[in-house]
Image 1 (cartoon, rainbow, N blue to C red):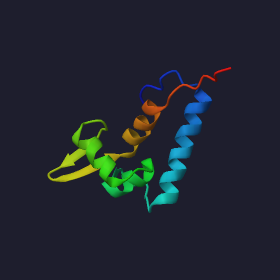
Image 2: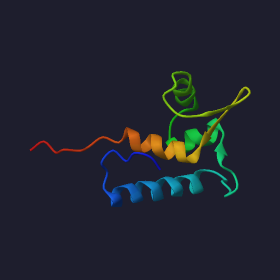
Image 3: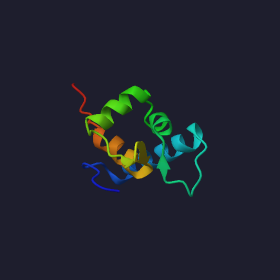
Length: 92
């Protein structure tokens, strides 16, 4: 799935399963469907559609252009979430 930025295997697997569960819960996603609309992708990422449109315009998130249509691959959304994870170091 790409770079995991030093995440442990268990954390990476947990993130993948959590994302897949969000996809199943938040929309009517069928196995044969590999491209998501901007509305579906915003639900997966839990962001506003306007934020996602700006991210597409700024080329901050991978997307597919089909003419005027913008679509997202589930794998790219998974990778985007992983790339946004920050290491947590408690301040003691």
